[in-house]
Length: 237
Image (cartoon, rainbow, N blue to C red; front, side, top):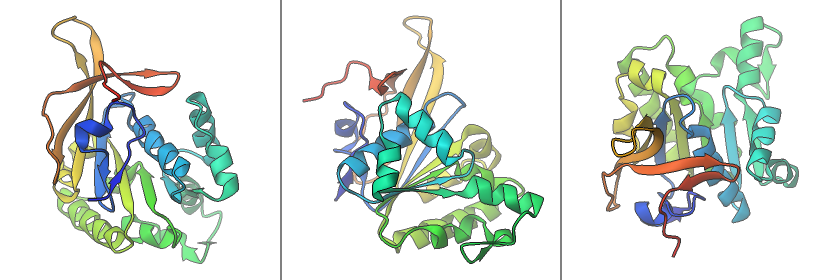
Protein backbone atom coordinates (compact mmCIF):
# COMPACT_ATOMS: atom_id res chain seq x y z
CA UNK A 1 0.00 0.00 0.00
CA UNK A 2 1.22 3.49 -0.83
CA UNK A 3 2.05 5.47 2.30
CA UNK A 4 2.12 9.17 3.15
CA UNK A 5 4.83 10.14 5.62
CA UNK A 6 3.57 11.75 8.81
CA UNK A 7 6.56 14.09 8.64
CA UNK A 8 7.19 13.28 12.31
CA UNK A 9 10.44 11.52 13.14
CA UNK A 10 9.86 8.27 14.98
CA UNK A 11 6.15 8.02 14.16
CA UNK A 12 6.17 6.59 10.62
CA UNK A 13 7.58 3.22 11.68
CA UNK A 14 4.96 2.90 14.39
CA UNK A 15 2.20 2.97 11.75
CA UNK A 16 3.77 1.01 8.90
CA UNK A 17 5.90 3.76 7.31
CA UNK A 18 3.19 6.43 7.31
CA UNK A 19 -0.51 7.08 6.80
CA UNK A 20 -2.19 4.71 4.31
CA UNK A 21 -2.27 6.53 0.98
CA UNK A 22 -5.49 7.63 -0.73
CA UNK A 23 -7.49 6.92 2.43
CA UNK A 24 -9.15 9.02 5.11
CA UNK A 25 -7.48 9.35 8.52
CA UNK A 26 -9.22 10.95 11.52
CA UNK A 27 -7.20 13.00 14.03
CA UNK A 28 -9.06 13.88 17.22
CA UNK A 29 -8.13 15.43 20.55
CA UNK A 30 -8.75 18.10 23.14
CA UNK A 31 -7.78 21.75 22.63
CA UNK A 32 -4.00 22.12 22.84
CA UNK A 33 -3.33 18.44 22.22
CA UNK A 34 -1.52 19.13 18.92
CA UNK A 35 -4.07 18.14 16.25
CA UNK A 36 -3.35 20.98 13.85
CA UNK A 37 0.42 20.62 14.30
CA UNK A 38 0.17 16.89 13.45
CA UNK A 39 -1.61 17.82 10.23
CA UNK A 40 0.94 20.56 9.47
CA UNK A 41 3.77 18.05 9.68
CA UNK A 42 2.07 15.89 7.05
CA UNK A 43 1.44 18.87 4.76
CA UNK A 44 5.04 20.07 5.13
CA UNK A 45 6.38 16.63 4.26
CA UNK A 46 4.00 16.22 1.32
CA UNK A 47 5.03 19.58 -0.14
CA UNK A 48 8.69 18.71 0.42
CA UNK A 49 8.06 15.55 -1.59
CA UNK A 50 6.44 17.58 -4.38
CA UNK A 51 2.84 16.51 -3.71
CA UNK A 52 0.10 19.09 -4.37
CA UNK A 53 -1.53 19.72 -1.01
CA UNK A 54 -4.63 21.53 0.21
CA UNK A 55 -5.67 22.84 3.61
CA UNK A 56 -9.40 23.40 3.98
CA UNK A 57 -9.43 25.91 6.83
CA UNK A 58 -12.73 26.21 8.69
CA UNK A 59 -11.47 28.08 11.77
CA UNK A 60 -8.33 29.99 10.72
CA UNK A 61 -7.30 32.42 8.01
CA UNK A 62 -4.51 31.73 5.54
CA UNK A 63 -2.36 34.26 7.39
CA UNK A 64 -2.97 32.48 10.70
CA UNK A 65 -1.90 29.19 9.15
CA UNK A 66 1.28 30.48 7.53
CA UNK A 67 2.28 32.35 10.69
CA UNK A 68 1.80 29.27 12.84
CA UNK A 69 3.76 27.18 10.32
CA UNK A 70 6.69 29.61 10.54
CA UNK A 71 6.94 28.87 14.26
CA UNK A 72 8.02 25.34 13.32
CA UNK A 73 10.12 26.34 10.29
CA UNK A 74 7.50 25.06 7.84
CA UNK A 75 7.69 27.36 4.77
CA UNK A 76 3.99 27.27 3.94
CA UNK A 77 4.14 30.75 2.41
CA UNK A 78 6.72 29.54 -0.12
CA UNK A 79 4.68 26.43 -0.88
CA UNK A 80 1.63 28.63 -1.52
CA UNK A 81 3.64 30.94 -3.76
CA UNK A 82 4.96 28.01 -5.79
CA UNK A 83 1.51 26.44 -6.16
CA UNK A 84 2.35 23.31 -4.15
CA UNK A 85 -0.02 24.33 -1.36
CA UNK A 86 -3.45 25.89 -1.56
CA UNK A 87 -5.57 27.10 1.35
CA UNK A 88 -9.32 26.86 0.76
CA UNK A 89 -10.77 29.63 2.92
CA UNK A 90 -13.83 27.97 4.39
CA UNK A 91 -13.76 30.31 7.40
CA UNK A 92 -14.19 33.35 5.14
CA UNK A 93 -16.95 31.60 3.23
CA UNK A 94 -18.80 30.79 6.43
CA UNK A 95 -18.39 34.32 7.73
CA UNK A 96 -19.67 35.88 4.53
CA UNK A 97 -22.57 33.48 4.50
CA UNK A 98 -23.59 34.58 7.98
CA UNK A 99 -23.25 38.29 7.24
CA UNK A 100 -24.65 37.95 3.71
CA UNK A 101 -21.75 40.04 2.47
CA UNK A 102 -21.55 37.98 -0.74
CA UNK A 103 -23.78 35.58 -2.61
CA UNK A 104 -21.26 33.67 -4.68
CA UNK A 105 -17.67 32.48 -4.22
CA UNK A 106 -16.03 30.75 -7.16
CA UNK A 107 -19.42 29.91 -8.61
CA UNK A 108 -20.63 28.10 -5.47
CA UNK A 109 -23.55 29.55 -3.56
CA UNK A 110 -22.51 30.19 0.02
CA UNK A 111 -25.56 28.50 1.45
CA UNK A 112 -24.37 25.32 -0.29
CA UNK A 113 -20.99 25.24 1.47
CA UNK A 114 -21.60 22.20 3.63
CA UNK A 115 -19.81 18.94 4.29
CA UNK A 116 -20.94 17.23 1.08
CA UNK A 117 -19.97 20.17 -1.14
CA UNK A 118 -16.36 20.30 0.13
CA UNK A 119 -14.95 18.10 -2.68
CA UNK A 120 -16.17 20.66 -5.22
CA UNK A 121 -13.70 23.16 -3.72
CA UNK A 122 -10.67 20.86 -4.07
CA UNK A 123 -8.27 21.46 -6.99
CA UNK A 124 -8.28 18.67 -9.55
CA UNK A 125 -4.55 17.94 -9.07
CA UNK A 126 -4.61 17.71 -5.26
CA UNK A 127 -2.92 14.68 -3.70
CA UNK A 128 -3.05 15.44 0.02
CA UNK A 129 -5.94 17.15 1.84
CA UNK A 130 -6.27 18.41 5.40
CA UNK A 131 -9.72 19.46 6.61
CA UNK A 132 -9.28 21.40 9.84
CA UNK A 133 -11.75 21.31 11.58
CA UNK A 134 -14.37 18.96 10.15
CA UNK A 135 -16.23 19.22 13.47
CA UNK A 136 -17.70 22.64 12.62
CA UNK A 137 -20.04 20.93 10.14
CA UNK A 138 -21.48 18.70 12.89
CA UNK A 139 -23.24 21.60 14.62
CA UNK A 140 -26.99 21.25 14.27
CA UNK A 141 -26.83 17.69 12.94
CA UNK A 142 -27.83 14.49 14.69
CA UNK A 143 -25.15 11.78 14.91
CA UNK A 144 -27.02 9.84 12.21
CA UNK A 145 -27.15 12.87 9.88
CA UNK A 146 -23.46 13.61 10.43
CA UNK A 147 -22.56 9.96 9.82
CA UNK A 148 -24.48 9.91 6.54
CA UNK A 149 -22.84 13.14 5.32
CA UNK A 150 -19.38 12.12 6.52
CA UNK A 151 -19.67 8.75 4.75
CA UNK A 152 -20.66 10.57 1.56
CA UNK A 153 -17.69 12.91 1.91
CA UNK A 154 -15.34 9.95 2.34
CA UNK A 155 -16.75 8.31 -0.77
CA UNK A 156 -16.40 11.47 -2.87
CA UNK A 157 -12.82 12.02 -1.72
CA UNK A 158 -11.88 8.39 -2.38
CA UNK A 159 -13.02 8.87 -5.95
CA UNK A 160 -10.50 11.70 -6.23
CA UNK A 161 -7.64 9.39 -5.10
CA UNK A 162 -6.48 11.79 -2.39
CA UNK A 163 -5.09 11.13 1.07
CA UNK A 164 -7.20 13.06 3.57
CA UNK A 165 -6.55 13.98 7.19
CA UNK A 166 -9.76 14.92 8.98
CA UNK A 167 -9.00 17.02 12.05
CA UNK A 168 -11.89 16.96 14.52
CA UNK A 169 -12.19 18.69 17.88
CA UNK A 170 -13.04 16.63 20.94
CA UNK A 171 -16.35 18.43 21.58
CA UNK A 172 -17.71 17.62 18.10
CA UNK A 173 -16.35 14.08 18.33
CA UNK A 174 -18.27 13.49 21.56
CA UNK A 175 -21.36 15.32 20.31
CA UNK A 176 -21.56 12.98 17.30
CA UNK A 177 -20.88 9.97 19.55
CA UNK A 178 -17.67 9.11 17.75
CA UNK A 179 -19.43 7.96 14.57
CA UNK A 180 -16.60 9.30 12.38
CA UNK A 181 -14.32 6.62 13.87
CA UNK A 182 -16.18 3.96 11.90
CA UNK A 183 -15.94 5.72 8.53
CA UNK A 184 -12.22 6.41 8.32
CA UNK A 185 -9.38 4.04 7.43
CA UNK A 186 -7.40 5.04 10.51
CA UNK A 187 -7.91 6.94 13.76
CA UNK A 188 -5.37 8.92 15.76
CA UNK A 189 -6.40 10.26 19.16
CA UNK A 190 -4.20 12.86 20.86
CA UNK A 191 -4.48 12.74 24.62
CA UNK A 192 -3.47 15.10 27.41
CA UNK A 193 -3.42 13.15 30.67
CA UNK A 194 -1.41 12.40 33.77
CA UNK A 195 1.55 10.08 33.38
CA UNK A 196 1.08 7.52 36.21
CA UNK A 197 4.84 7.09 36.50
CA UNK A 198 5.73 10.79 36.84
CA UNK A 199 2.50 12.32 38.14
CA UNK A 200 2.81 15.06 35.50
CA UNK A 201 0.40 16.01 32.72
CA UNK A 202 1.77 14.86 29.36
CA UNK A 203 0.69 14.48 25.73
CA UNK A 204 0.22 11.05 24.17
CA UNK A 205 -0.58 9.63 20.73
CA UNK A 206 -3.10 6.79 20.89
CA UNK A 207 -3.76 4.88 17.65
CA UNK A 208 -6.83 2.66 18.11
CA UNK A 209 -7.19 1.83 14.41
CA UNK A 210 -5.02 1.78 11.29
CA UNK A 211 -6.27 -0.76 8.80
CA UNK A 212 -3.80 -3.05 7.02
CA UNK A 213 -1.20 -1.98 9.57
CA UNK A 214 0.21 -3.74 12.64
CA UNK A 215 0.01 -1.22 15.49
CA UNK A 216 0.60 -1.13 19.21
CA UNK A 217 -2.19 0.06 21.48
CA UNK A 218 0.30 1.57 23.91
CA UNK A 219 0.02 5.38 24.09
CA UNK A 220 3.10 7.10 22.65
CA UNK A 221 4.35 10.13 24.64
CA UNK A 222 5.32 13.28 22.76
CA UNK A 223 6.21 16.93 23.26
CA UNK A 224 5.46 20.04 21.22
CA UNK A 225 8.74 21.88 20.66
CA UNK A 226 9.98 24.74 18.49
CA UNK A 227 10.37 22.18 15.71
CA UNK A 228 6.88 20.74 16.13
CA UNK A 229 6.04 17.25 17.35
CA UNK A 230 8.83 15.36 19.11
CA UNK A 231 8.16 11.69 19.81
CA UNK A 232 9.80 10.76 23.10
CA UNK A 233 12.27 7.90 22.99
CA UNK A 234 11.99 7.73 19.20
CA UNK A 235 14.21 5.54 17.06
CA UNK A 236 14.78 7.25 13.73
CA UNK A 237 16.67 4.37 12.11
